Length: 72
Image (cartoon, rainbow, N blue to C red; front, top):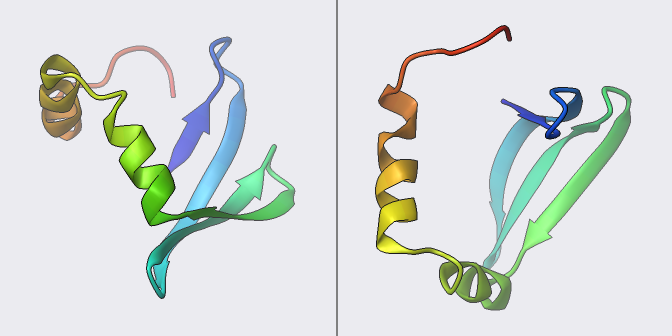
């Protein structure tokens, strides 16, 4: 999976997501070369849920089923 900046340049390539105890570890490369492992804790996940509205939750659930737009 790739994450892009607002100008369309590649920010991060996610290669794995795995459980580490009660945390979620996201592994990948930033800017195509720098290895990185980011950790999401339960407290941080609860903070994230405060940013979600019903409309955004619906959008995220339907996102994988939407067609492609633009160049990848």
